[in-house]
Image (cartoon, rainbow, N blue to C red; front, side, top):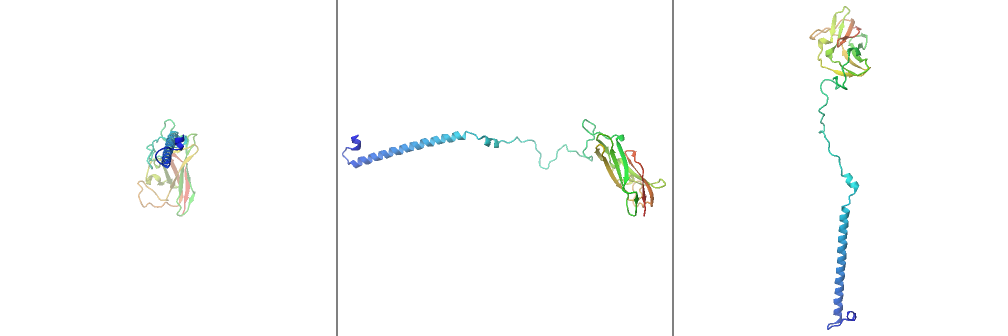
Length: 227
């Protein structure tokens, strides 16, 4: 111990003290570096351990449903109804709507007035009403309906069949107690088969108008034309 506190040697004592001081400093530096290295390794291990712990909320937020079938924007389904019908089923299979029985339908003809003055065109409404308790389909196209006007002598002066431009099919589903109405306007002109042009206006007087739908004839309707 005395040699440590009181160095002995041929050299000056200050040199020995400086050597000892340098040695102590080096030892201290080595110790500090060793501590820092150990702490760094420990921190790295902790970080790795933390990285292995998954946050359930973060995992859940990354889950997405598997993509299902899709169509391009604007695309239409391939099973969309097409044709001249309204899309109501006409087949008689299970769950389909069957055609209306003639006895289940009431056909009526009405007009918007009984007397028409100068320049007034008669307007007629043919109404088909489903009187049954179930829905059914009915063909209402111009091919199965028509109106005829006769004068006081019984001569035919006008028929919608003479100038019918189209006979396209028009099938509609009619619910119970509901109806489908079709409007026809008479220009007060004579008509003839083939719809020849330059037909003359009918004379003033009373005219009887009847309508037919699928071989069902309505009650006659009487109107008066004046000038």
